Image (cartoon, rainbow, N blue to C red; front, top):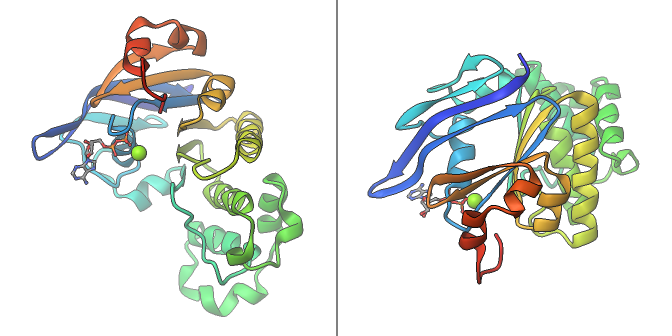
Length: 249
Ligand code: ADP
Ligand code: MG
């Protein structure tokens, strides 16, 4: 079983708007799959359907061989799906290390004793994750005072706390400068390959998309209009038409 994610005929409407319509694709382990398309194309809706935030009108989502339709986000998370958010989701007043410890605790279902035991809990696993994302030297700083790029690294470490096989990253580099952006995506692709994780990500920066993705899928008005390698997508007529005359999104 090499696919971590299989999506078939996925559809979701909001009132009269077909946000996602008949979308299907596969994602293999150890690969980065970019989902691109203009604003409003349905990318975030797709992510929300895959992670359980939204229920599809029809179609199926299969994660590591298990159909997850109708499962709630927490249950999807438990089967090994990590997620980073477009908006920084860390607790600003807690230290970097505590943020990671909470994520680890939550996964190990020990949240009830959380507040009592944070100061005494073993920090080695959390420090290991911080080393992995390259910010172990910041472990005792409050998240609220970190540089933006480091907050994004904390978020990545949090997303890795449940040892995911599938990682969903909706605009992971939003708000970052070009160098930071490239740094975060290089880090992500190194981690993904060593841990054999499949990543589905959206990204505005086309240099990052074409430089980092193994494959690319293109949505337009809720429909999947192209799927292929970066070279295939670059040379696809329909994709060129969608992006013609406008800033690629
Ligand atoms: P993208 O992430 O590609 O920019 P979205 O998935 O956010 O696109 O949106 C796809 C379409 O669905 C848009 O027309 C958007 O306005 C609409 N949409 C998304 N979420 C909702 C919602 N909760 N309620 C109503 N319409 C929505
Ligand atoms: Mg979006």
